[in-house]
Amino acid sequence: MPSERRPLIAGNWKMNGLVADGMALAGDVARRYREAKSPAFDMLVCPPFTLIGKVAEAVAGSGVAVGGQDCHRDAKGAHTGDVSAAMLKDLGCRFVIVGHSERRTNHGESDADVRAKAEAALAAGLAVIICIGETEAERDGGRTLEVVRTQLAGSLPEVGDAAAVVIAYEPVWAIGTGRTPTNAEVQEVHALIRRELTGRLGADVANGIRILYGGSMKPSNAKELLALPDVDGGLIGGASLKGSDFWAIGESCL
Ligand code: 13P
Picture 1 (cartoon, protein in one colour):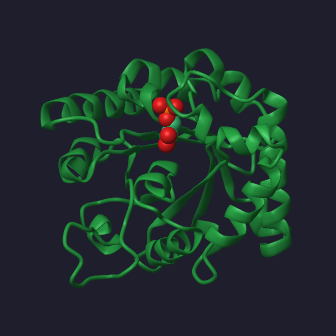
Picture 2 (picture 1 turned 180 degrees about the vertical axis):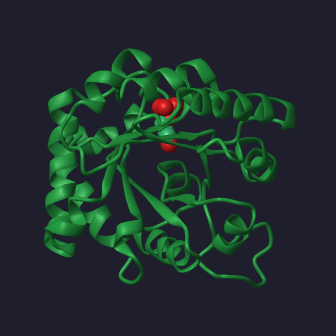
Picture 3 (picture 1 turned 30 degrees about the horizontal axis):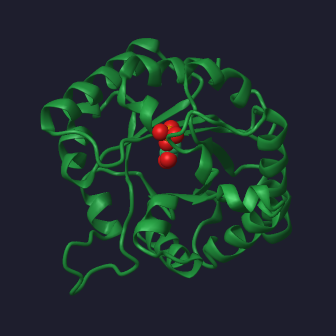
């Protein structure tokens, strides 16, 4: 984790939390971040849409950022049930996650869909976290690097501020399973992502882009993962729902 990239510890709450839970968790995270006084990492929480407004108010002034878990590719229009990037921004979001494997699987989102959403996010002034990662069958078939390269190439925005892009490498088989790749396997994929970004955007931009690891990151494995040279933070699901665990992961950056 070289010093030119400030680590980003991001919590993806997924479809969890009613108002009382979300407020308690957001308040806890905000208090810890505020009391830590200039922590050496950025902290982000991505609640479900229903909680974003309230969570943004709860963390206001603490330094903790708020993000959405998805956005529509269009700025507005006849899209029942969807939410635009501008709407997220309006509620106080600074980030949005796009292309999470759960959306790729459950909603059939393609790389082209993910790219369109990423471009919409940048156009609205949000930073975008683009998720990519192989399935277990793809890893077992020795196709990890090829799959990651293809997803990255197809999902990266072609317009917009590349410096506002964050990549999250999330092996699908590691999400919510308690299993993780070895440190060497994680670094191999992150280094590949950095090389691909360099080829596309040039070294100056690529060296500033944060590449997060996600998939069963928890306090007990965070330190070694976050110490890898091309791992610049984490995208954390289950462990982000408990303030003390989420905070312990953040402290692993120090
Ligand atoms: P877990 O941390 O629960 O494995 O989830 C990871 C994830 O999908 C974050 O986006």
